[in-house]
Amino acid sequence: MKQNYTVRHGALEGVETFLAVARRRNFRRAAADLGVTPSAVSQAVRTLEARTGAALFVRTTRSVGLTEAGQRFLDLAGPAFEELVAAGEAARDVGQRPTGLLRLSVPRAVVPLILEPMIASFCRTYPEVELEIAASDEMVDLATGGFDAGIRLGQFIAPDMVAVRLTPSFPFVVVGSPDYLERHGYPEHVDDLCRHACLRLRRSNGAIAPWSFVDGNGEIEAMVSGPLIAHDYPTLLGAAMQGIGLAQIPRPVAEGPIGQGKLEPVLERFLF
Image (cartoon, rainbow, N blue to C red; front, side):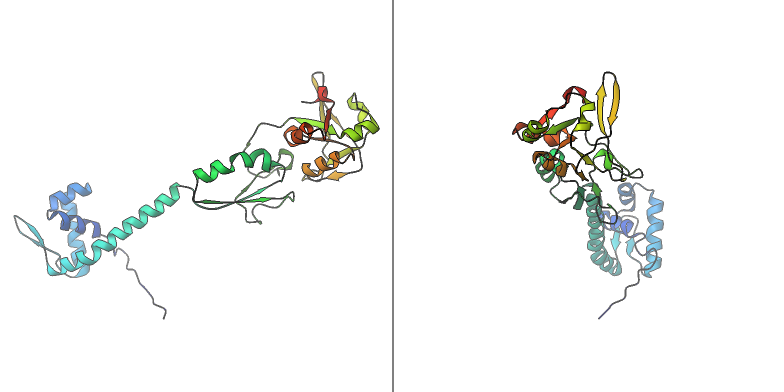
């Protein structure tokens, strides 16, 4: 059975004052507890008595006591008011500490670089947060996908996205598999890339990312070509390890395969 409740405007007004007087049995002491004047306490009690239609206190020159109506009001209002105070403190406590579900959308490449080193400490620090990590190279819209936040590599950040830098810029490296370099030779200069199969990245805005180098004090961009265009670095990394061509990749992404001898860096003196 559905029940309807009506809460009158000002129904709680004066209740805290009443409880303070009932506890102290003294208007002046109650006023001191509440940080108001005794006259304000008296006025609040009179207003509450007028609203309830019954005298709540018996006042004499020496003491303050509860009427029968006042005792009934105390028995019911006291515990209820304490629950209201506790509810407010609980709500404030939740607002001051992280809690609930936190959904992150991240590219696969950043999971081992940024998230894995901090997941354990984050979960220990915020035990009331449920962390959900959606690792995908698909550039999902954070709002429509129901995500609270996301991590994006610099070139994939939309112009209107509110972003905070998490790390310094990653240095890049050009890599190729030993098999590919044995078949096609090692490029000695940026100009040599025109004779190599170069694996390219398409940015979120649809443009093919140029390869960036430094030559002396100047920065140069090389428009390379090759058999493969990918939308993420892990795909480029895998293709380079298979000997399909050279790839320019953030160094942290390529460090593992380089250390394992699956990839070799080239043109290092032209890189940032």
